[in-house]
Length: 260
Ligand code: 13P
Image (cartoon, rainbow, N blue to C red; front, side, top):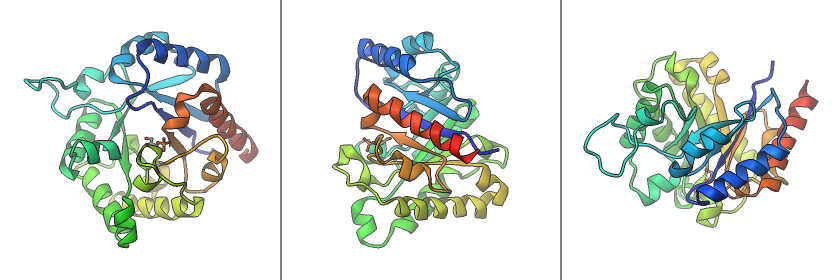
């Protein structure tokens, strides 16, 4: 059987609680339950709790955009993965906006991945090179370092519940990104899978879901999802628009139906 396609909407720092609830309402009207597609929403930390009571879990799973790696303590302003355990299925870890604006180092990302796994939350680990790194021909080295440190100390069993998202920083809309060619995404995701294979074996690498993210919209999503290496998409701006996001889910389902 084909892997489920994973469609994740990262709302970033957009939408207050009321607006978030309205968006969920609209999405629930438009998105049908598909067993071959998993739809995941990542609203703000503030909206997670009310949305968890609103959503129909047959349609959506919830995702945190970030959390702190300690389970509890005197860390003013932080929320831990331990606190999110009952609320979310997934958590984004190491998004480029965390790495770039909030100084998240490779070691911090590694600690967050471990905290997520420890608390039975599936981390969606974001990796990707900047424009400068790409221009300098360093993209593979950057991905190698990001992937190997993020997965450090995880067991073969832990790795079954880890997702990686390749998001080249130069393709993200919030960084004025340009659209990546599908063949670029394919090449780099194949490279990431090779890293996982070197660390945990071919089987683990093949069963891991690896997503693409960067200016994905309802028009170009098919070109990414059709790639053999791509198991889903991490969508930013287009996930805030219910027409666009529900269309993206529809395309994913159509593709899965065509593959049967
Ligand atoms: P955009 O789809 O807006 O480029 O955002 C991608 C992203 O950063 C998702 O995490």
